[in-house]
Length: 324
Image (cartoon, rainbow, N blue to C red; front, side, top):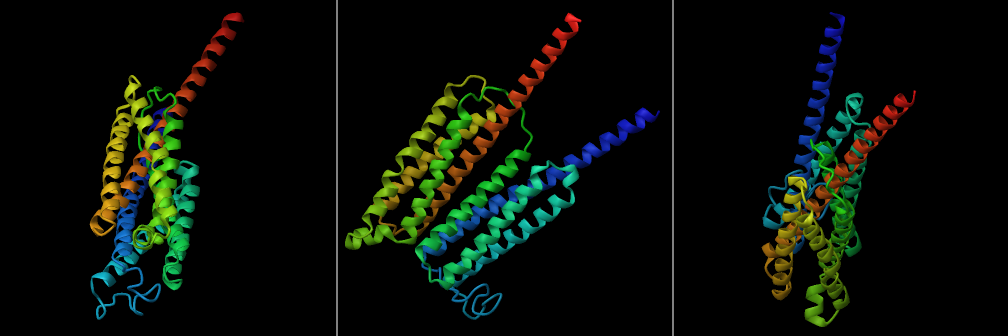
C-alpha cells in the first residue's frame, strides 16, 4: 500500500515538473517570436529614418503615448520601444518563474534565463544610447548584435526544453551547423554595420565606404558554403531525425531567398524599404533555423553518448558477474 502511495506521489511530482517546463517553454517561444518581430520593426525604423522620431528616452516627447505628435515615423519608434518593453517584462517574469520553481526544473534554466535578462537590460541601455548619441553607427550595430544574441539565447532555451527523441545519426552535423550559425551571425553584424553607416548610399553616391559594402557582399561566401554543406550532409545522412531534415531544408530555402533579396536590395540601392526590412528578417530567420538545428543535433549527439556509455557500463557489469 505504501509503495502504491509513493508511486502515485512520484507520478504527480513528475507531472507538475513537466507542466512547469511546458509553461516556460511556451513563454520562451513567444518571446522569441516577439524578438523577431522587434528586429523587423527596428529595421523598418532605421530604413524609414524614424530612429530619432522620439527625441527623448525612455519616454517619447515626455509621454508614454505621444498622441499629439503621432505620425507614421513616431509610431514606428514608439511601437519599437513598446515591443521591447513587453519583452523586457516577460524576461523578468521568466527569471522569477525559473528561480521560484528551480527545484523542479533543469539546473541550467534559472542561470540561462538570468543571462537572457542581462542581455535585454543591456539591449535597453544600447537602445537609449542610440537616441542620446544620435544614432552613432557603432552603438546601432551593437544594438542589433545584442538583439540577435538575445534571440539566439531564447532559441537555445526553448529548443533545449522541447521534447526530442535522439536517433544517433547526427554524425558531424553538430559541428557543421555550429560553424554555419557563427558565420551567419557575423555576416548579420556586417549587414548591421552596412546599414548603420549607410554604406550602400555613400558608396553609390560618393564612392565612400565601398570597402564596408563589399566586405558584406563577399562575406556572404563563407556562411553560404557552410549552410549548403549542412543541407548536403543532411540529405546524405540516412535515418536522420525528421526534425533535423526539415530544419536543414528550411535553412536551405531561407538561404536562397536571402541571396535573392540581398541581390534585389543591392540593385535597387535600398530604395524599396519593405524589401530591405524583409532582407534582415529572413537573415534573422535563417540564423534561428541554424541555431535550433545546432541545439537539436547536439542533443542527439549527447543522448547517443549517454546511451552508449550506459550500455558499456551494463556490459562491463555483466562481464564482472560472469567472472565471479
